[in-house]
Image (cartoon, rainbow, N blue to C red):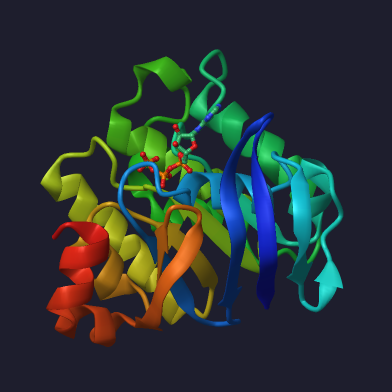
Length: 232
Ligand SMILES: Nc1ncnc2c1ncn2[C@@H]1O[C@H](COP(=O)(O)OP(=O)(O)OP(=O)(O)O)[C@@H](O)[C@H]1O
């Protein structure tokens, strides 16, 4: 579904990715793991067209990606960044409506009603401003907004960061529901247990390259790889 072929990218003069290749398959969940600073978030930003490629290519459903973030979203990839990026001056309703208006429409899988069914808590907060939400509610809103883009592929950067264990469990269960419904996902996570219980496939990034590839069960069983690449 999504192929990164030997991509090189970074921030201005600072190169971070050195020939990174990976594949995310349709109907499956891919976890991207690795230590702090390995290049996981940079990989996602390169996929989303937020950083230029120095070389290599990114194919979505076999076609080169349209270079601009909006075009990439339109082609069917929704991205929930680490910063969640909800609009703080808008209410929950307004944050959701923006996505629904731009990407929804007749025949759309995801409607306002369906995302509120998934996250009833947001339904109780519809008129609250973005800044009045807890971290967990902000994460739910960011995921809900991503779903309203009716993506074929949902990409999440550290969805559990800074959240209390009970909210981590809730987000886990919701993502499990989305997986069961057949949504393809890529998840960058520091929380090894969270990532490996959701993922089918795992890649590990080390210094801007893929250093390990396998299944979630493989990495759970491979203590050497965990120790070497994740410091677990
Ligand atoms: N805006 C930026 N400008 C310059 N360098 C950056 C920028 N953002 C990240 N970097 C550098 O790029 C490298 C990879 O960062 P990246 O955020 O991709 O790591 P990561 O694997 O996602 O880890 P983390 O869990 O810490 O987010 C790091 O050395 C980081 O310092």
